[in-house]
Amino acid sequence: MNGDKRGKAAAVLVEAIVMVEVKEVVVVVVVVVVVVVVVVVVVVVVVVVVVVVVVVVVVVVVVVVVVVVL
Image (cartoon, rainbow, N blue to C red; front, side):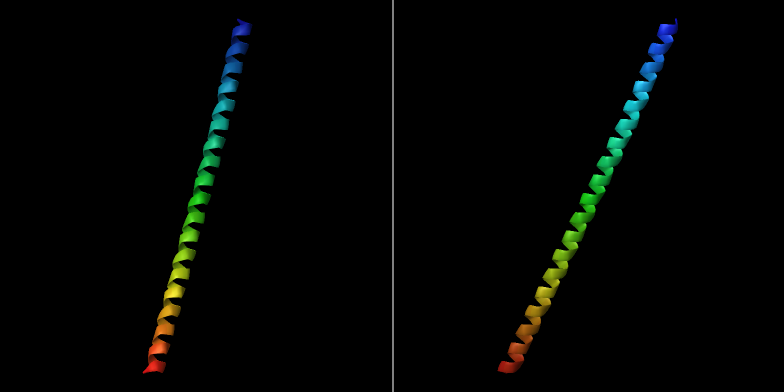
């Protein structure tokens, strides 16, 4: 009987450890996904800002050239 109880206790303990490890892995995966999404969003925002700045500079240059020529 005593051996049975120890076996069950060991099984419950192993199961609890596995559950904790699974939860830790899930937390790590979620954190990694969130970080990747944030990095992608930041990169997209930077690219959009750079494109807008380039477009504004081109428009200003074109306007200045047109004004100077005319």
